[in-house]
Structures are given as C-alpha cells and as structure tokens.
Amino acid sequence: MGEVKTIHIGFDDTDSIYGKCTTHLAFKITTHLFYDRNVQFIDYPLLVRLNPNIPWKTRGNASVCLRLRSNQTTEIVEYIRDTILTESALDKNTNPGLAVFEGNVIPYQIKQFSTKAMYDVVSIGEAEELAIRNDVDCVKFGNGRGIIGALASIGCTLEGDHTYEVIAYRKSGSKGARNLDRKKIIMYNYHHFPFTFNNYDPSNKRVLVAPHGPDPIYCGIRGESAFHVVTYLMKILSHEDIEGFMVFRTNQATNMHLMKKASFSSMKPYTAGYTRCFVSKSPKIIKGGHVFFEISDNNGFSLVAAVYEPTGMGSIAARLEVGDIIDIGFGVKKDAKCQYDVLNIEYISIEKLTSKFTLENPKCLNCNKRMKSEGKNKGFQCENCKYKSNSIKIKVPVKRDLSRGIYMPKVTAYRHLTKPLHRYGLEKTYLNIPEFIRPMYSNWIKVFPSEKE
Image (cartoon, rainbow, N blue to C red):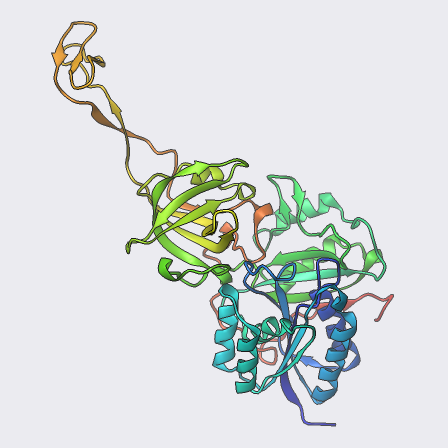
C-alpha cells in the first residue's frame, strides 16, 4: 500500500436542467469511498454555491469538494474520474470538471480564486493557469467549464461562517411526488428554529424541503449543525423511498456572494456585491409590479436599481424617497431591452430616511383655520373672517411610512446563498477545525439496508 496522503477533490457541472445532480454524484462517490475503501474524511463534503448571476450556470451553480486522507489516492482519483464520465449529463450540454490538489494547506492563490468566483466572472483560462501554478491536476469534459467550480470548491475552506444541509436521495427509478408528511414538517420547522431554517414558508404555507422535478433528491434540511439537520430529517423521513442521506457543510445562507464592496464606476454585468448609495430619482412601479429607481454614489455615478415583484420587497422600494441613504446587496443584470446594466436588489438596508414635507396654505392668525389661495402670487384670505395675508405656503412635515432596518425578500424568493434575517448576528466566526482534532458527527452519512449496511 502507498503512503497516506491528504487530497482535496473538487468537481462541478455534472448536471443539467434535464436531470442528474452534482450532490447525488457526490453521495455516490462518498458512500463508495466511505464504505468500500475505508477512506478517512477530514471534513464533511463541501457544497459550494458560486456566483448565482452567471447566465450559463447549472441549476444551482453548486460545486462539491471532498477532503480526505488515504493511501490509495491514485486509485481514488481514477474511480472519481470514471464515475463523473458515466454519471454526468454529458449529452445535455454539460461540461464537467475535476480538480485534485494534494497537500495539507490550500495555497492562498486558490483561496483568492474561490472568493472571486463567488461574485465575479471567471474564465476557463484563468482556472487552468492557476491550476498549473499550484500543481492542481485538472480533467475537463466537454468545453471544460466545470474546472472553474471544481477549483473554486477546493479553495473554499469555509473557515468563517457556514451552514449545513443534509440531503436525502430517492432510490433509483423513484418518480412522482415525494411522500412527505406536511404536518410533521410544519411542526418540526417550528420546534427546531433557528437551528434549522428555510424548510417551510408559513406566509405562503409552502413546504420548501423538497424539489418538484424528476431529480434524485428526496428532500434537504438546512441548519446550523450536522446534528440539528440530521435530527430533523430522521423525524420526517420515509425510509421506504430512500437510498440514503449525507450531510454537506456549505456556504448557503451566508451572503458569501455579497461580501465585496462594489464601486459604481467599475461594475460589470453578472457580478455581485454590496454598496452604500442614495436614492437620486423617485421609484416607479411598472407593469408586473416591478419597481425601478435611480441610485447614486458620492462621486457622481448613477445606476438603475430594480426590485422585482416575486421578492415581495416592491412595497418597500416604492416608498423610498430621493435622498434616502441605503445599503443594498445586488447582482448586476444586463437588461436586453434597455441596453444598460440594472442592479437586481437582493436586500435593502435603510440607513437614513430623508425628511418629507408637504406644502399647505398658512393658517389665519385670527381663526387658526386654513386660508384659501387668492391666485398665483396673490396671497391668501380667510373664508371665515376675511383676514388677508401675503405669506407663502408652509412646509409641513409628513411622517414616513417606512423605518430604518434590513428588508429581505420572501423566503420563496431566496437564493441558495441568501442569508435569512434571523442569521444576522448568528454568523459563525471561529476557524473550522479539521476532523482529526474535532471528530465529525457520527451519523453524517447513511445508506439504508436495501443497498448496504
């Protein structure tokens, strides 16, 4: 047997809108390594969501990284390569990529590349050049675009904030609706919050744990620890339909794509970030309930911002006034009709509300009643006592039907990376501790008896 080595294996772009699933492929690979090859995993499988604004992304723009120690590294990489080849939707314009790095410390350049892939557009050439410089072995299928996500997943060490998701998979050939108990999901969503979240939307009475398409995912439970998500899952699971489940550590619900402060003068399509600005033109509501308004920075640059109806934030945006100071998280969208970039707002944080006034006629000094205008520049007269005045209309403060604070989209409009309001202040800030120092939760992976014990 060979020397025990630490390897980091990233892969991406194995699915398509027609089927297959990158996380299910990860489940198949991981169960084989865990049960049949006795591999030591030094971290949970990582589910890394990349820039959601990329137009050529796969469904959830998710890549996966496996970090492990083994004395069979060559055989493992060959097995994974062959599995990707046979289990990907290669006939559906899918372009998988595989990246393998050997070593205990991830190079800083790869971490930087991963950070950039969260908010920017990255090219295949850039990924290939970085891989060569850092001794990362890459395998491309199709046009090879998947190596971008594969390399980025290796560099995403999630040393700060992170969450967990346990995903259960249906048995091969299972079709139709998932056999989930709605009442249980609602009950445990209430009892486990905030340690699990985004599993049920009470406002719309909608279950969020299960997809509706033909893919192999049965359901997924999101939360703050492996223990909490597995505990929830085991209370709602129907074993008869399930192949097994696996816990992923992930950057979901962290706003990782909105961490870069963006400059108005350097924004480009398909990027993401956050900025502080002020409202420079009043909001307008267009057909469909979408709200558009202009924002500006202190350097004189202006851009168009949009709040789309499905987010549910339109009523907030429509009440903004010129001069309001706001922080926004956004993705830059290329508007095909208007031929300019639009900031697709993901959250609004109102920092300062400008004072709003209305102009009213002055009051009579005798009757204290509102006087009537005599005509343009002709002053005012009291209808009651006929007192006349040459004064002008007065400003009267109007109470704003809006408050400072963070405004979020509806849960059903969340992106995978959207940080829920309740997680503000609950972010994890400690460094991730490797498995050989802090053991992983023992029940993080399971294949049910019909397949393996």
